[in-house]
Length: 124
Image 1 (cartoon, rainbow, N blue to C red):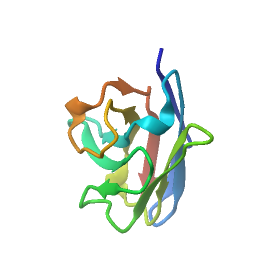
Image 2: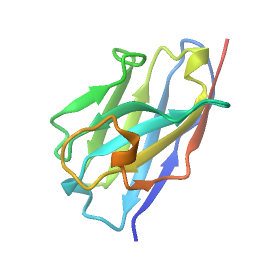
Image 3: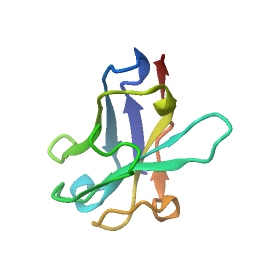
Image 4: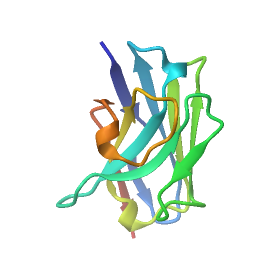
């Protein structure tokens, strides 16, 4: 059974940084692409970033491009999201997800397993 467990969320001031982690188990991690999504109160879940199975290709939402970096350590079965220059509008629950393909995607429905989420709150 695939399990994804996020960690690293918290409260940070605007302009600060956080690093999220997602520990994966139950699937050969290195074979599949991974993604980060977020959901703010009253809003739909939205794409943040995606990374290919090898880590060689990444893809970002325009709203985070240049501020966030997605990466993965296939030896440790762990996905990361480094978030810099955080803004109050980045406040949301952040989810990691995996999909049964090696390439990146921004389509929520193409991901088949999800973590429970970690809260990120950015104060102004």
